[in-house]
Length: 143
Image 1 (tube, rainbow, N blue to C red):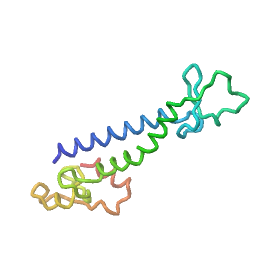
Image 2 (spheres, one colour):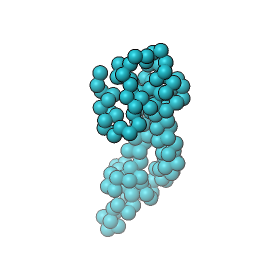
Image 3 (tube, helix red, strand yellow):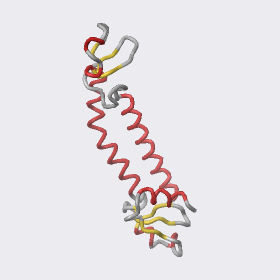
Image 4 (tube, one colour):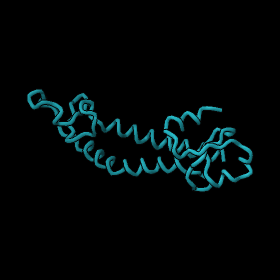
């Protein structure tokens, strides 16, 4: 189970990194939101058209249609990537059950099926439900 948890965790981190990296590439450095009507300078810098005052827009700016299309795709994919990450982080990879307990001896979150498994017999288990997220994160770092 430990390897499965590690691999699922790596997959979630990978998806999150991909999502975060894509979001960063498609975000205006001025308004910090997805590009809206992106314009690009000859140097390659891209901004939202409305983020630059019309008088300060040089004549060599052009609409970046590829960036606009990528933003539209990213907006459609974002909920899917976020849901995928949440599922991987909150579910037991072996039993497809919600992770409801923390096993102190094994330093891992486990599901209800794992709780009654011989692997966790006699271990100190804490129910995760009701813990503040900071307490839950702290529980993961104690041994």
